[in-house]
Image 1 (cartoon, rainbow, N blue to C red):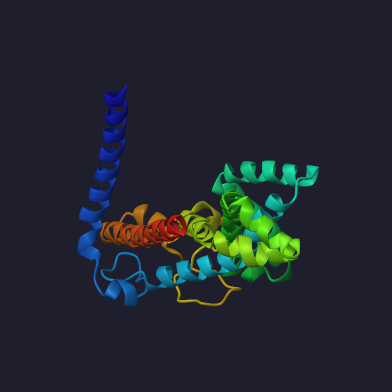
Image 2: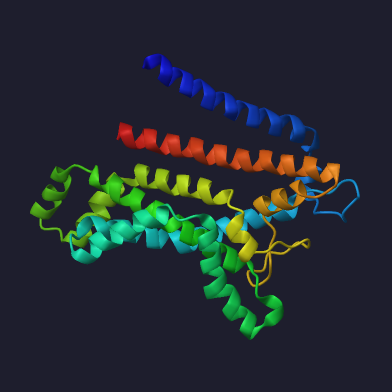
Length: 271
């Protein structure tokens, strides 16, 4: 059985290595300074960069954090501190949301943000805000469940000691429980960010993409996943290489977030 398990591991790692090698070999030649400073050029022309997509991705992730983190963390605290029928039902639906395909979240954001905006201003329905809402909703269940499970690992003795000293329940949670679990909570947040950073389907319904440089939240905005999708399906060879270069940048972002998550978790374990 040890040999079977090792063989399965080798197969999985080999497939991952081949994917990484394909992306690196195809995209490393397009990696240069201009890719971070130039925007897209007309189809068929040489050159161009991914500046718009990189900045757009950072903006979308920022909006998602503003929406998803407070709801996710507070929801995790609520599920830990209460044991009612409502909290148990909420926990069940949080698990269900973790398994929902991202395209469903994109359609949901399209229905509640894009369509109402289209009725008010038909020319400005798709927007960076709509994309951030879709990604924020994707973050919520991951952050919520991670927060709850990490808070459960905090020793009960800390809670009892705080309550015994006269602290209220909310003060105990805010000043004792949450600080003790900050490393694990940060890990969950970073893992949620790594997940949404590469999502394409929700952005097709919300952010839509934009060839022009844009930082306004009420206008369509570009993003790395959208660029990779559009360039990889184009008939031009130079755009294929740009798509692979964008994939390298996206992998680098996810790698940094994953390393940061491991570092935060290591600090939590040491504490």
